[in-house]
Each structure stands twice: as structure tokens, then as C-alpha cells.
Amino acid sequence: MRNSASAFAFIFTLLFVLSYKAEAFKVLEIRNNRILVDLEGAVLERGDYLITLPGAEYQGRAITIQIRPGQAVAKLQDGNFTVGERVKRILGDPSFKEEAIKISVHTKLLNNGISIKQKDATFPTPNEETVSMTGSSVGFMGVIDWPTDWFLLRGSLGLEPVEVEGTAKYNSCSSKTSTACNVNINYIAASAAIRYDYYRNSRLVLWAAAGSAIKFPLNKESTSLNKGAIGIANSILVATGADYLIMKNYFIPVGFEYHYSLNYSEKVPVITQMALHAGIGMEF
Image (cartoon, one colour):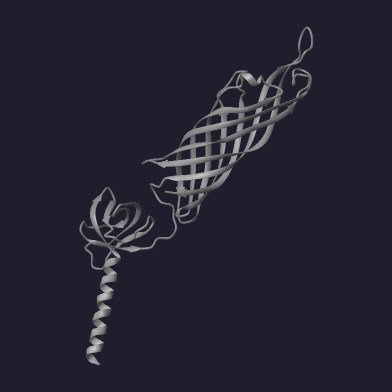
């Protein structure tokens, strides 16, 4: 009976030691508050914590920010680590990961305004006026946010319909036969911007961005513009928004954009644009 108890105690202790070692990772290198560890065939995910084992020379905690083949990189948060020591994994709560690429798709609610100068057919002196047209439309875009040391490089590509209408005082639209003026253009829009995250916690990030956009017209319909003369449009943009983490690696992005047109000719309409957008995104 005593031998059975001793054998059971030995097996229990052996299993405990083996499972304890399976939870541990060896520190290979420490540089600029970054800690490189050897996974040794075990599982570690971004957002998991690494802590020193009891009795270590220094007590430390780090959060995993990158997974490599057979290795992982963690960012030091508290205390210190030592090269060659073993560290333990603690599962992390869902949280945004630093140095992660973000890709998202958005539905975009656009509010556009166009003001153009028009003349009617009055002879010999046509009546001149500026016709203001406004309208709302729904577009779509894909966004990628690429991290650097200080900010994120933000790029987008999508469809932006411009649907506006207004009423002229004179018959200056529809080949100078009507007061009903409108513009309907579908743009393929691409933008590039610098994004700065000015507030961050585990689940919420607030950001601001500035950049420029270029828009290529596809199908065009208008009673107030020469359709054949409508060309590429350019604008500068400012934006702000938030990303909210709903589960590990998945987040909901929302934002507001304002576009200021750089075009000042009859060939390309000067478009004032404000947009609200929301969607779903994923970290990589």
C-alpha cells in the first residue's frame, strides 16, 4: 500500500513538472524593451503575457506582440528579464495588438455639395447664376492601416457615388430648357493618409488622420455639366474615428471624413464632401 502511494506521488510530481515545463519559454534575446523567446513547440498568441517564474533574479512581465516561426517577440511592461531564463505564459484578455496590420471594409454615407455657374438662353445677354446642389448617397471602401514606429500609414479604395440636385432660378440646365439641375457621377476613389492614434486602451482606440484623395469618374449623368469634360478629381482630407474590439482580432471601425476639393475648373466639379463610415475589421 505504501509502495502504491509512493508511486502515485512520483507520477503526480512528474506530470506536474512536465506540464509546468510545457508552459515555459526560454528567453533568447533582449533588445530595446523587446524580448525574443523560443516557443519550443508550444503555443503562444499575440496578447498573451509572459512572466518570470518564481525565484527568478528579476521579476518581469511582457505582452506578446509578434509570432514568428518557432519564436515570439514580447514588449516589456514591468520589471526585467534575463537572457537564458524561462518564462511562463498567462492567457491575455482580448486587446488591440501593437504593431498589427488592420484591414477593414466599410459602408460609407456621403453628403456632397456642388456649386456651379450657369447661364440661360436669354438673348442677347444671358442671365448668370450660381446653382447650389446637394445630396446624399451610399458608398463602400476597403481600408488598410499599416503601423510604423510613430503612426500608421492609411490607405483606402472604394466606390463613391455623387448624387446631387438643385433648382436654378432661370432655365439654365438640361440644355437651357429647365430649372432642374443635377449631377450623378460614380467615382472610384483612392486615398492615402497618415493616421495617429491619440488614445488607446485594451479595447478602444481613438485616431485622427490627414491626407489626400484621387477620384476617377466611371459612369456620368448630369443636366448641368458637360459630361464629356468631367475628369479626375483631387482633394485633401481630414478624418477622425474610433476602433472598438468586439472579440480577439476583430473590431468595429467608425469614422468621419471631410474632403476639400482641389479642382477649380468647369471640367471637374468642385465637390464638398462629408462622410460617415462604419464597418468590420480584422488585425493581422
